[in-house]
Amino acid sequence: MSTLIRASSITLNELKSKFNLKLVRDDKDFFPEWQTDLPKLTESEKQILDNVQTGYFNLISYPSMLENIVQLSVLAPILQLAGFFLYPFWIKSESSVGISSEDEEVTIEGKIDVLVLKEQFWVLAIESKRAELSIKVGFAQILAYMLATPTPHKPCFGLITNGGSFVFLKLTMNDTPQYCMSRVFDLVNPGNDLYTVLGILKKISRI
Image (cartoon, rainbow, N blue to C red; front, top):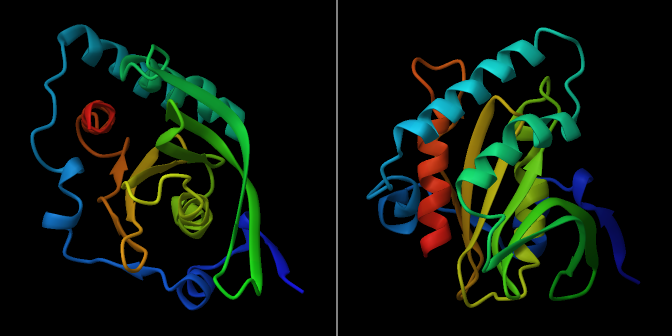
């Protein structure tokens, strides 16, 4: 009988042992999408992102910024600017997914917070966390979701955010599942890292 594990409880070690998932550290060739040839932003886009950043710092001055507030105040404006609310893209929320190991000893089930699709192709899986939580707690969870992609012959992209920090992931499923992560983009850094976050989202939307 298969053991059922909730995606929110899975660990990276379990994904490694049960699904043969491997981390790629040299990302220059594996994950160039977050580093090179990013689209330039307009001044109006930058102004909107500056307002999003200002709003974020206002919200975190109050206790308990919940996941739905993260999505409403930070994710929604960025997804709008990236064009993900427009045809040919569409968005699903709380999308149920499941995946079993090859020996069927383990089945992982969960719900993706936000899933951006183009036809049936997963463009981007997004996991949002409470503002006070580290984005590190979401790595295994979103990778479990990405392993369930219905188009394993194509790269799958993911994004983890707690509203103030952002990390992109890329997964390929060729001979063995491999993934790589971008650097952490954080709103406490000088300037506004949302500029780069939006540039990466636009780049992914054009792939």
